[in-house]
Amino acid sequence: MMKDLIKPIAVLAVAAALVGGARFGLAGTAAANAEAEQNEMMSVLLPGGAAFVPEEYDGEDENITAVYKGDTGYVVETLTDGYAGGIRLLVGVDNEGTVTGVVVRALTETFGLGHEALTDTAFLSQFLGTAGEAAVGEDVDALTGATVTSKAIAKGVNSAAAFVTGADVSSGATEWGG
Image (cartoon, rainbow, N blue to C red; front, side):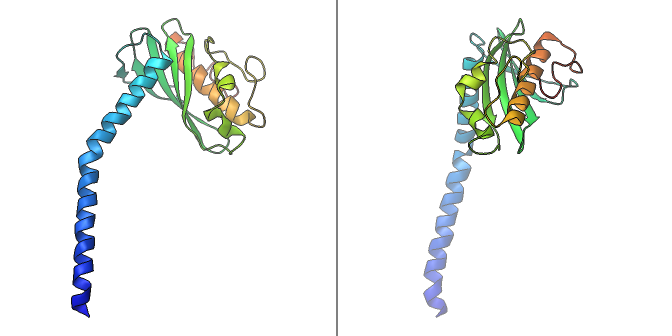
């Protein structure tokens, strides 16, 4: 009975070793692909930005998680609290403080409501051309049934623009609700 189990166990051990080796060998490729994807996305968010260099951010705006400097401005990564969890954005802001692009990178909002922020280009395009003053209900129409999500996105966009313009983060520019 024990002899009958040796062959299948050996086959499983070899298969596990092969899968583990492949995963280890491809880890560098996956990281390089993710970096290339992010650089390409940043180039779209900030036209003419060329090479993006990460900058250390130690400011007081807790919404900002990372900053990347380009030739024509910055791409700022933000994380704000939505209805069901964090909403991670990449926001392109030119050197004059004008929003040039917005993309939602991750969210866990309600499917069919706040989750629509991932693909609703009409909603996201409302932020283009703003300069850190977008307020939901005044300057920006909220996603239907997702006011909290809409306000969280406005908060992230406003924080990114305020970083570039040097606006006081304690002002209304980054307060809840935009």
